[in-house]
Image (tube, rainbow, N blue to C red):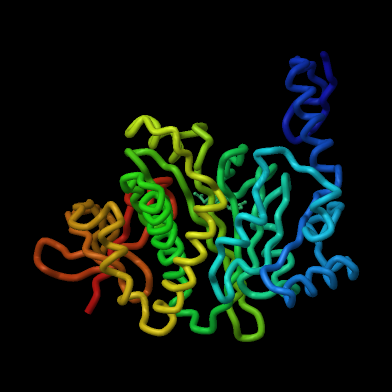
Length: 363
Ligand SMILES: O=C(O)CCCC[C@@H]1SC[C@@H]2NC(=O)N[C@@H]21
C-alpha cells in the first residue's frame, strides 16, 4: 500500500513511502482499540465502597485523559451480563484473599485500557485513598523517564493511590513498594510449596530475576492542599516471557513444576504486605525496613566509580566508593576509600542509574 506523506517537519514536501499492509492493519486496529470506549469495572470489598462505586457510575465522575470514552460497569451488576475471556483478572478471587484495612479495597478493573497509572492519577481526588486499578492489557503502558512499558497479557499491571504529608519521606515510598513486592512473591511461593525465587531489587526501582528485569515500579506525585498525592504503579512479568523473562518461566525451568503463579495471588499478597510495611514506614521511618531492603537489593558492598570535576572544572578524577545503604533523603549512601561518607545521585543522563553517579559529601 502506498501513501503520500507531506509532513513538513519530517520530510521534504512530497515523498512516497511504502507501508506494508500488515503494519497498516495493526495501526488501524490500535486506533480502533483506542477509540472504542474503555470498560472500567468498579468493585468494593465492603458495602461502603460498593455504594461509592454506584455513585461514581451514576454521576459519570471518572474520566480518562483526553476525555476518551468510558463505559463504567459495576462488578455486582456485571457478573451475569459480561463474560470476560478465561484469562481475565478474577475480581472475586482478589477480593476474597485481600485482608487489608485500606489499600486495594476499592478496585477498578479493565480488560484493556491505556494505562492504569493514567486512571488513578487522573481521578485521584474522586477516589478513596488506596484505590487500585488493574488491567489485563495496557495500550500505553508508562515506564520511568518517559519509557514505554510493554504490557501484554500475563503481565501483572496495577496502580494504586497513597497520600502523604511529610515530603521528606516521599522518595522512600518507591523502596517500600519494591520490598513489599519481593516479599509478596516469596510469600506466594512459600504458600504453594515453591522455593523462593530470589527476585532482587535493582536500585532505585527495578526488580530482577536471574540477571534480567522482571518488574518495574513507577511512583509519581503531585502536591495539592498541603498533601502529596502519590500514584504507585507496578508492572511484573508473571506469565509473559516477552520482553525479558517471567516468574512462571523461571519456576518451570528451575523445578519443572506445573504450578503457575496467579496474578490475583501476587497482587493480594502485595497489598497485604505493603499495608503492613507502609504503617511501619510511616510510624518508625524507613530505617525500620532498611535491613530487609538491603538484604533484598543487589548493591550491598558494591563498588562503583564516581567521576568528579576539579575546582576549575578542567579535570575529571575517578573515585571508587562502596555502597552501604539509603540516605535519609532517599539516595545511595556510600563510603569512599578514605572512610568519608557520601551520597550518590544519578546524573540523569544515563539509562543505568549506577553509571554516571554524582557524589555529594555528607558531613
Ligand atoms: O520500569 C519502569 O520504568 C516502571 C514500569 C511501571 C509499569 C507499570 S504497569 C502498571 C502501571 N501503569 C503504567 O502505565 N505503568 C505502571
